[in-house]
Length: 134
Image (cartoon, rainbow, N blue to C red; front, side, top):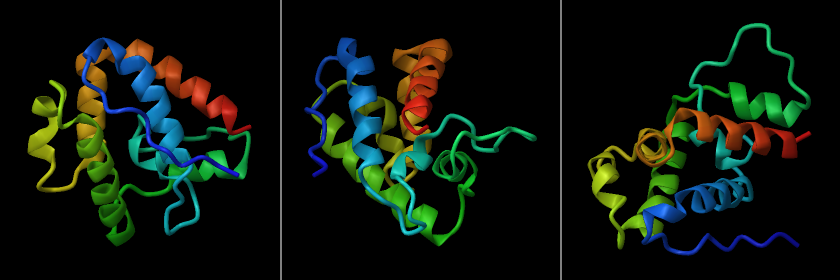
């Protein structure tokens, strides 16, 4: 039985890497209308690389499903709600609260990643998460 409990509320930016990993795992347990985990919403690359070979069908779907349309918009608002609930009481919310009105969880999440981790650390975590899907 999967535990769908969210990560703890994040108040200390120094704990971002731990929170990021747990948040992505949390999203992976929530299934979209397309039948794939909501982690597709926070993937690093909006457009998939040409000619890439994927280790599984699920991995391919996560990394190639279009980031547009009604389902995407609805699911973005859901994930933005998750982010707000977990970040509003800490300093990170100030970096992303302007994304709330449009429900743009993707830009909000990537903004926090860039502020608190930089690209290299985020890429390592994404590669690790992709490895879990194999």
